[in-house]
Length: 238
Image (tube, rainbow, N blue to C red; front, side, top):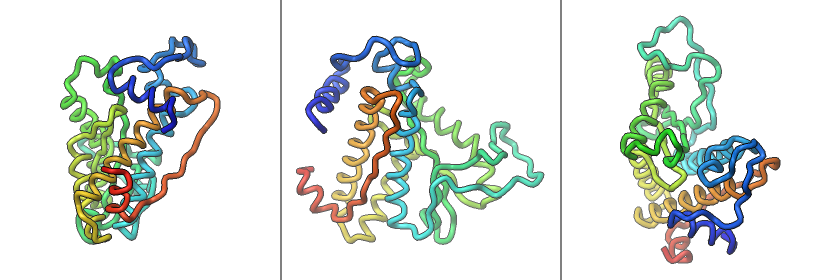
């Protein structure tokens, strides 16, 4: 981080508004931290989601030979679903597919969601309930179709802009770190520390992008894989 990003991060960490924020958003609303995390003007909300998705997909590709971003699902040919919210059209594309992650040969599907726990719709809801509701919404959309047609598994991966992870995301993350550690012959705690640090900084940088980025310019960043986790942790003093 540069010095302005570091100062903004400190202020956000302690619940204070960063200095020199604009008074008005290009969308016409009053600009503040909460609005910056929710405003779709400029596409930063999508970029924030896609960066987390791409990072997780890149790590999955190191332990699963067959992986894909936004895989198409098989067409629905008259199948009936008990859940009314199940997506049945071509727009039903989970974020990531990885074969063999949970069981050999079985396809595992994942869908990422980034939420702002300080949004007005969540402000009076306990975080445990926020995670449960978000996971339930994703399962209502994909779980039954993937189980019955794809014969695969579905896992909702819920993250917050404040750095939190939902229960199923934590379980997924622990298993992912364990598989990476085994494949690269690294210590599990080194892999976990390094990847948690990577995710934390990734989310923080995307939050700062929503806060300070120009609402008229699209920005794309490439994330590179790191394989020597012990050395990276040593260099970073984790």
